[in-house]
Image: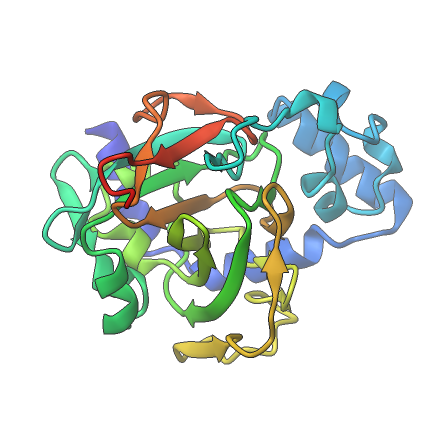
Length: 291
């Protein structure tokens, strides 16, 4: 009951106004204030700096740079089977299972429409209607860069405006259709294992999602009209991102939803409420669908 009441408070919060303030704070570079902000943040959030390329927290030019810090490659070895999809982030599995009747399971008592998730694009929704999904949650302490599960050629990107509810477990469990209501960026790729979509879901304080091909997609400095669904077609651009390559990043933490067709089968380790690391196996080719 306490968590349900806390989650209900998010309905009345000015999500975008709070996130705009956080956007500015996270980019303060004046050293005394920047260091104070980082000191306060790290006192509240346990961060493993031993894995970071730069281990000195005060060496970062801003809180945002600290959020999006690089980590040492040796701490995230990639699954060796090139046909397997890699987990694209550090974090935890919120849910992962088959898509049923065009619906995606969110939490006990809650699901939402695949069509709504991808911005009402019927063609895109039909591609994954019999597939699988994995909803991966990044907490504020996690590594915030997002990597490619497999080598893919970018086909299109869809920006979908929306709310910025928190994506922490207590809100996911209590706010219906949360991932289909929040601001998000849908990235669609063609791969050797079939179509793949990565949905980067915004959240409160996470109003600055970036991709490597576009730059800032959402946020104060974005050139996208935040009030309209906006589509970008890349089919003639030949943008190819390799397996394990960085494709985007968040501030603070948020959620990535990976969609696959029935050609891929989730690895047995990808189950709800388990911790995950970048580079471990996310999904394997389903032998039943291989010609």
